[in-house]
Amino acid sequence: METSKKVKQEKKKVLLMGKSGAGKSSMRSIIFSNHVARDVRRLGATIDVDKKRVKFLGNLLLDIWDCGGQDAFTESYLTSQKSYVFSDVGVLIYVFDVESSDFSTHGTHGSSDRDLQTYAAIISALGAYSPRARIFTLVHKMDLVATEYREAVLNSRSVAILGKSGIFKSSLGIYATSIWDETLYKAWGGIVNSLIPNLDIVEDGLKDLQRVTDGEEIVLFEQNTFLTVTRVGSDVGNENPNHDRYERLSNIIKTFKNSLSVYADSNSSHQFDSFVVKTRVFNLIIHRLTYNAYVLFVFPPGEAELQCAKLNILAAKDEFAHIESVAEGIDDGLKMARGNSTHGREY
Image (cartoon, rainbow, N blue to C red; front, top):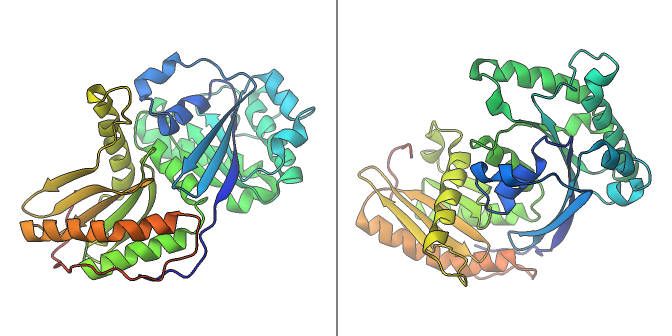
């Protein structure tokens, strides 16, 4: 693998906004602070702006501004703090509570559509100070909606939100989320994926690794959040019918990683180095690839194939560490063993 592009570090200001009680701090704590869903009920309301800096995949710094959603704070953001809050924003994530009585999809005026009026005012302020920002809206607490009605509810909410999104309408991302399932990981994975600088370099490296090893699927996860960074697959791997497998894996693996804290001392970060699944139809490895990332590698069954894959991952470690660093691209190629391909599988 050859890389000739410079890898630069980027900092993104991320506004997390929405009405008080919408679930903003809960989801942030689950994704970035290793809380589990049952514990976030203990979290109190956010007062004014709670700032947290998160280093993501080495060269991406997220400055997350969790903005309290009480009316007094929102009024302050839109008046006296307007320039301070809305300048230099990379991303706005706006959270709507799906059960809010202040959300109207009928375009009426008054308190019934207060959520949309507040959202429209925030969009207007953002357009004035950060017109190049990216916008994502999360229709949250969808677990409270009966399964058979969720698609219709999301569609009606989406139409109303798009109508208030101003200059950001064409690029708006909308997700249905819940802290109780993998939808939260799908949404935040999509958001963070859109922010990662030099993602093309990372993907090129994974494609080289997949091509020379005949791996069926390779998925890169960020080591703290276990959000999916990117993936590559062969024609065989792309036949996997479980389209939500990445988010499900993120949820499962992070839960497993956090459970290790029971056996760790106070000086340990309870990280694991590798995890292997061997079956008659496929092998799977989750292995620490760099300081900031894990790789999931799906490949044909057999002990020889397993040992070959381990050697390939070890050979790739230094190269991917260079890709993550703030430095010139590395011109050294990787020498990797070659495996064999078989049929599509589910995992």
